[in-house]
Length: 253
Ligand code: HEM
Image 1 (cartoon, protein in one colour):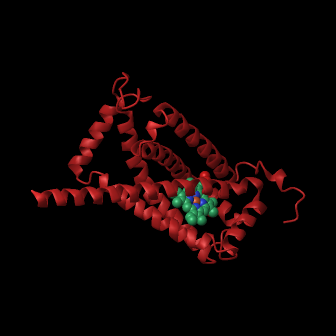
Image 2 (spheres, helix red, strand yellow):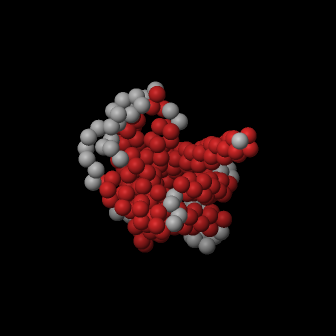
Image 3 (cartoon, helix red, strand yellow):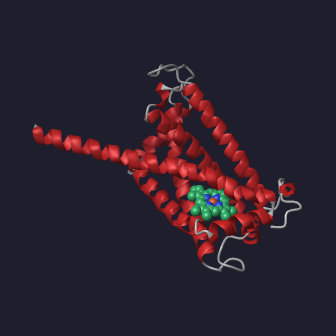
């Protein structure tokens, strides 16, 4: 009896540690992505602004370790969050059935701990299923992107020097990388904003903020970052001139 209690306690502690690791790494990655959208968004001021930003981050040895730290966090998050993904084919089939059923469920409201949920019943479960799907896409496309950027930063394989340059970034995006980047951007923004919403609920934020407010916040973050990232991608692909180029007009750097 005592033995089974001790092992149940140990299992519960282990599960809590896994939750903290997957939630903490997810939170750090989401914070990084907000910084990322601002840093890559420097292309909105033109190639000079982007090159200044990249050179500064490399000269002060910020970019180099960041690639390793982010890649490690990315993999740690994937491994710990993936423990909840059904691994058997039969379970996967059940999930597909469940997703179909959930997307067609009715519109009646459900009572939650503190109030009515702003979502249709089961929409939160459907969001979780899309968390898993976008996570799998991100694992493939994000790993490719991180390896590409690692090679770019540490070797002179792309462009004239070892390091990120506006000319090579815009060349590869306009040559076709805009498509995987567009998919990655959509997945990252969905995954991060829904992930933060779910994390906040899990750790009790709905005791202070209503779910409705948190859902609105999640929507605002999703759209602001998606639009900013989308415009950045359009400028990188060369389909639009940098809209903030006037900010650097007349400067000598
Ligand atoms: C330290 C790590 C990272 C660095 C240095 C970095 C740097 C860059 C650079 C320079 C670009 C411009 C395009 C290019 O040069 O290919 C870019 C674009 C992009 N990156 Fe990253 N990146 C990092 C991590 C990530 C991660 C972890 C993700 C998501 C999983 C991500 C998602 C994207 C997306 C979606 C774009 C397209 C442009 C946009 O809409 O913002 N990046 N990144």
